[in-house]
Length: 381
Ligand SMILES: [Zn+2]
Image 1 (spheres, rainbow, N blue to C red):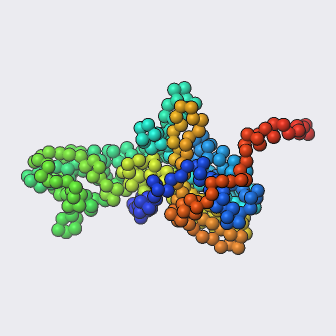
Image 2: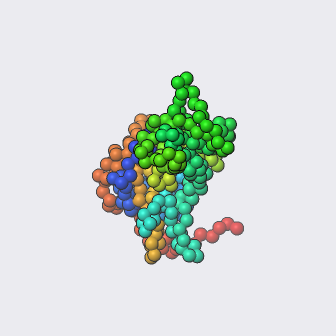
């Protein structure tokens, strides 16, 4: 329910994007060769994916099936949350285990924007939000931020800069909403207290904290002019509280994951991208701990990788998205119980040095043809 702790803020900044991106058609064969180089046995590897239910995730799944020779086990909930209660059943489905977790975000190359994806099967092939679950969860937070950024005002009274704050934002007794770190916005008085200089009908006027107006030149504001704080409402100046279910892997798991970093998400250039990225990062940290504790994973080889799927909106004539993958981290476990974590640069380099050739890959068309021509089995009823 509470989101005052911004300690996760540096996490978002540590995720490198541009230099770490690879096409799925390169990622999956290289990944297959990587796990084989670690002793995972061809033909005995059971892949698993923790992806969103969105059909845009189908192309990566087809590539996993093609290169690993098996349709992947479904380990995912909507938004790319890992269903950790499926660890035990999954563990019985293969000798060597490979789990790929990815949250996702759409990208429209024409408008160069994140968060949208063309749905070719709609009547007018329109674009809709992607990931829809994440975008839907963000809406409330973005609206709260918009209200605050337009209802915290900077003004000049008798030559001195002041800040005007809407009473709703000053109400500490709300159950939920955007809450301000007032000591970073308002100049405290000699006794260390925050007190308004004037009260208006719906807002109060305070002396402004010097750090708030670092980016504002007082010469550019004339006496009694009023301007909205707008983008100068930086993430360190506020936090969110929201009444949500705290059940793990429940209805609000996505929001629960993100609430601490939400100020950074709503102020980022592409909130849908930042939110998907944060989801993958937080799910990796949460999930690898559940893998370590899972009794049925003991004495198993496991490779768990987290990353971000970027679904490039398909253009006319394209059946699938041109999905790209950005790895974040990996957990690798051997049969003796030893394990290691690979950070982003390391996992990218290890993938990069693998061959893209995979002699074990399945020709899916041929495989389907073989099944079509196989002798009929009659069921016993
Ligand atoms: Zn989704």
